Image (cartoon, rainbow, N blue to C red; front, side, top):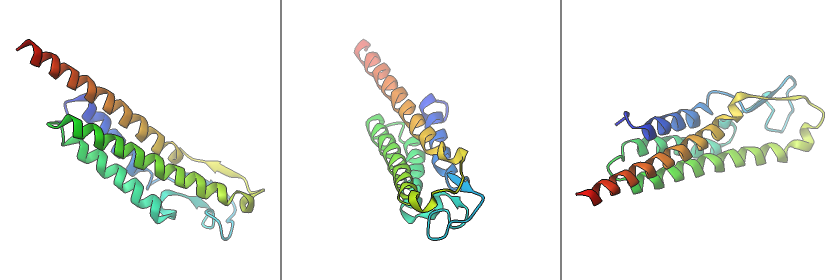
Length: 145
């Protein structure tokens, strides 16, 4: 049921969550041993926890698309996808901050990949907003019958 606006938002949210695997969050010109920048890139695949949470967020967003008949469950799954994505993003920020002293003087460039989890969360919130609008429309139509 991709003709509904919330389905498009959920598809974009899942694409954003899965897109974190393709682009790094940050990179540096110099490798910093024993940190998240040991390979000169910090990405979602550097931590098993981030891999699991981003994959769970992406799969939940895709699953929510097909739950159009049960809007309450679709809202819950959408919130769960957003929460998992933000939790994984927080874990990445925490891992980067813990290595901040070791990274110290190395120039670190941010990447577009750091915006993907936030974009996925925004898309999930927009999907929930439109699902609720759809629910309100169905209830008003039921009252008219």
